[in-house]
Length: 187
Image (cartoon, rainbow, N blue to C red; front, side, top):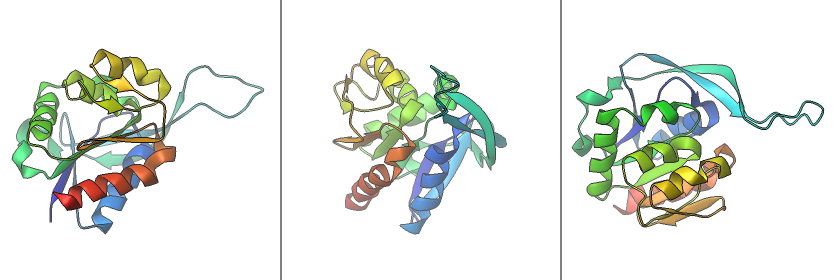
């Protein structure tokens, strides 16, 4: 069964992560969750509350489900994987400093394997220098991260540029996974 690398950490967004975690095996792909360490991580619900009486300018994070990383980044090799799925939440803000994750990300991209990314996950791809010259989307507040990485940001639900599929957030999960699975199956 082809394996897909899914980086996780404390603060991975629940819907961004779990939709792909359960959807990819339905099409015959094994999801390998990996983190800085092989351990249990806390996911979060990450949204701007829709209460106009109590406005927020930033997203709130609420504790959600837990997910176990079955491997540490340092113990993995890119050739073990058919692709990479990068979810959002606050985790990418911290994970983008992990040298082993950046190595894996660059190697998967250089090998011409499909990569899917949504929301704040663009921070990891940008830090790994994997969006330069690409057309991408992400949540508007991460547009600067995409542009600083050399990408052209567009505000639309899903963007496919070669073997890179990007989406704004969990509301675009269905279309993102449809395109990602299509790319995985044509490889």
